[in-house]
Image 1: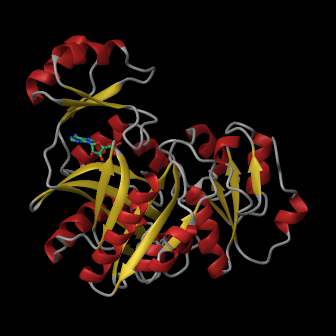
Image 2 (image 1 turned 90 degrees about the vertical axis):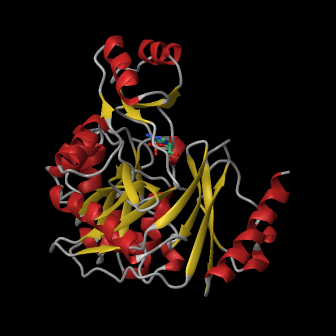
Length: 380
Ligand code: AMP
């Protein structure tokens, strides 16, 4: 165990204490939301790479360090995670010491893409047809059944397009099979879509569900670059369809907390890409663009408090900063809300985000256009 902040320092609080597995930017924003509502968060940082510089008391230790996990749980009101790739054994161990929300059973159902896709099928929810191949022959069978291109996705550990490849010909299929990782992959039909969107929802302990408006997500190389909230093609029908999908999953999983469903939209049709069992990048706009943010509502839900309102306030756009954070003076005059995660710069890494909010779509779009011009000028 490294960098334990000290039991005395951590346990003298009168506020509820939320223990968070993970210490990246999502943890950081949970900490900040907690500060606004009198909740103390304590982070568990699995490696030096993800240290959230001084955001809250933090324990830095391996996922399987039982002494460190006991320290994390000591005096905590409830525990949660901000990253879904926590080993199940860690969550199971922690669950014996303190109530964990969402429950470990949620991770069992969604961490492995094969089980997650199986869950969608069992519930009759729309998702791209898929197969979990056992051998090269079944990979070729998937190619024959779904057609090429096919999308191969690692069963475990993939995110932001990592662990994923597009197979365009038989040679790609053979290569994917030969280079499969230890846990294998699933093969999914390539979906054609108008755009990608998501719905972020929260389920309280008393069963209440609230949803933020559906948003559009724009990606580059599989990484989210921009979220527009609400979705430019938002309609009551789109919202209702997305809410029905999210509510079905939240209820089936006995979920408590915030969950995101990433979707492909083709006109009126929604197809689930994947579920994120945590606060989500496409919900960062809610900090300034909604009555209650996803971070505050996650804390409210897991502490059994009444949920805050999820209605949008104006029109927001969130832009991710990848690699390096632009200096504040480049955007200061634009009324931009700047979130610097204080990460070490690294190519492609999410190091911060910027949010603009307008009273109208036109105002938001005009601000976003200027912001994007400025950012492009900096990176040239
Ligand atoms: P993921 O890591 O599953 O979120 O995938 C990253 C990106 O790959 C998505 O945001 C999509 O742009 C693309 N993608 C994933 N699955 C498919 C699919 N079945 N068909 C087409 N594009 C996909």
